[in-house]
Length: 142
Image 1 (tube, one colour):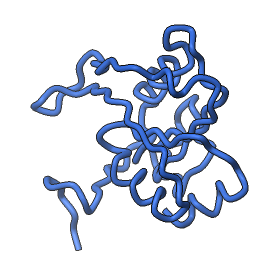
Image 2: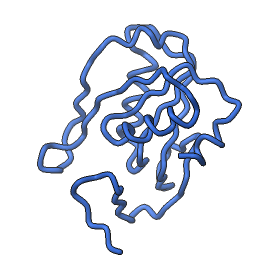
Image 3: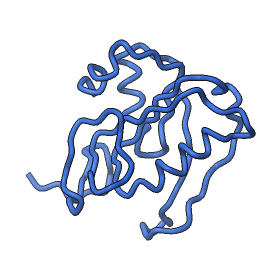
């Protein structure tokens, strides 16, 4: 996350928004590195409990504190882009109280997408499976 911190150095964000669950660990780490204490979550799920894709489910809540604010949206992986697109659209139009700007930071970006992150650590192949060390169920080979 130090590489993301270097990329955003000098840019003022009012809030970090972690896409739950993938962005939670990253937002906490980036907060510690940069000193940003305004952190919120956007809870969205595109997968069922058995891991199969399903229609996106959003946990609705009040985002009025984001009105006219500069947001850094944080997630672990930009894969298909659907979750990020839905999240950005939702935050930009929440009850007409639009945010001022949204920038996106991810660890991994699969560049076969229309969505391009503003900040990322690594570009990877679109068919590459990525396991994160903090995930409980993974297939990491040493």
